Amino acid sequence: MDGETSRKTVLIASAGCAVGGELAERFAATGALVVVADHAERRALALARRAPGRIESLTLDCLRPGQCRRLGEIWGDTPLDLLVHLHPLRSPRRLGAAVAAIPALTRALMDGLAQGEGLVLVGCRAASHDARPEARAFDAALAALAPHMQAEAGTHARVNVLRLGPYTGRTALIHEARRLAEGARDGPRGAVINLA
Image (cartoon, rainbow, N blue to C red; front, side, top):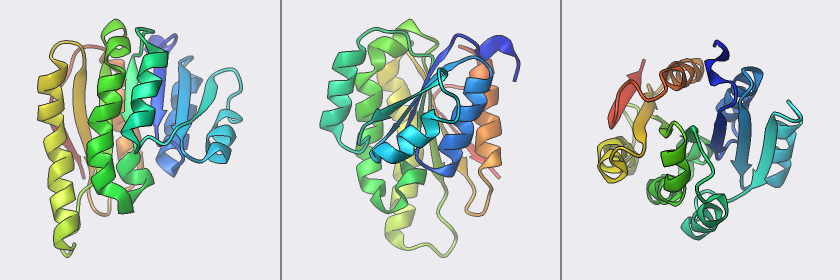
């Protein structure tokens, strides 16, 4: 990625998974200030140690809407260029909570997103062909978030869901997140981008 990402502020929610660590390192390497939020303090601190001064840690249970609202009150209208939700990948057994928490955190940070480049990405994995009904229902709900969240955000933010195939590696998500971040305010809005 080129220097276009430098001086940007990136918040990765539920960053304590493999894709969160890789995204944090890649964005930090371009000069962005990256805030990694995770409910496990030790994981957030470990991520921050990968690039001191470029990655900051935040202990936050992103699946609790009350904590998300409090973060939004503290963040205020400080510019936020990119918000990445990794709750469905970090906590795949708590997809119901993720469906509620993703819009809650985005809503709480909307003033900051409106001041920055306002890109919101939700990373998730599609249900496999033999998945249980509840897994299929959550998959459909996560895919439905993009257009509904985009309608709520209006022109303040650009919201897209990056949906990995059931057996697709995380590299596809990392590549697409970087590509969309380089596009600033251009590119898709309210879309589900299937990564096969």
